Length: 60
Image 1 (tube, rainbow, N blue to C red):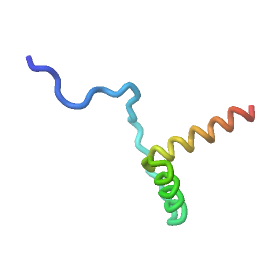
Image 2 (image 1 turned 135 degrees about the vertical axis):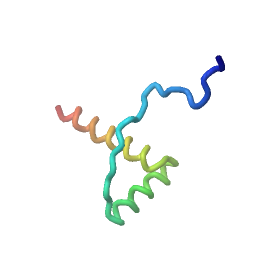
Image 3 (image 1 turned 180 degrees about the vertical axis):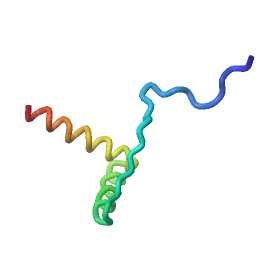
């Protein structure tokens, strides 16, 4: 039997897909932030969620 081929399994698979509708100005802002930080749109959104969540934890 041959070894398995393909990408290795992720330790934290991203299984949930979310669609978001943005206006042109918000999309432009997202792209500017992502470019400035040399990251993708998705990475920027995930980082933004983490920042907002940590702010909530600080307020508790």
